[in-house]
Image (cartoon, one colour):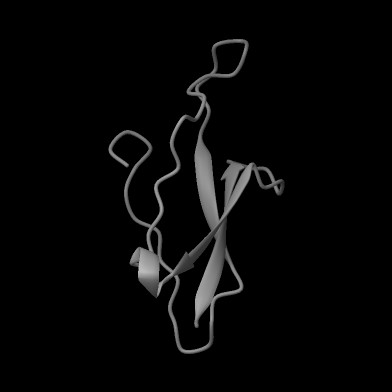
Length: 69
């Protein structure tokens, strides 16, 4: 079975906060939930998703926003 991994990171960071494996059984989708909106000092946190290990013949894409999912 083909699968791909995605990493959730804080914008500007190379450290994965969460990793999720995507596959056809899950419709190649995942929604990260329960995330902090603000740093301890009140600064809004911006997140980004990075695709890892995308199978040959597949194209990676990210959709949605932090506000709408």
